[in-house]
Length: 89
Image (cartoon, rainbow, N blue to C red; front, side, top):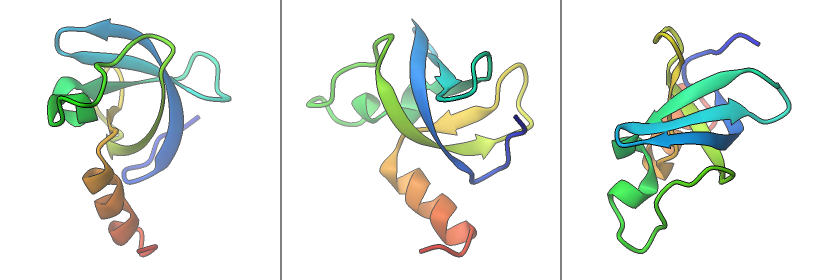
């Protein structure tokens, strides 16, 4: 699978670290991305649970070229921006 900036994906968290979460793209075994801690809703809203392995999220791709994993965001504001940039909003 090839990632594209502003693309939307459904993912499952497979690992959590202090700096963010590693996720696997649903339906694409072995295809991973990374969500920085500040790009998860719990960073901004104390009423949102912290990320946990097994959580399902809808995300957008912020940087498809980032290594070793593309940078993703689970923030609705970023998803809305991605949709505008794709001309879908």
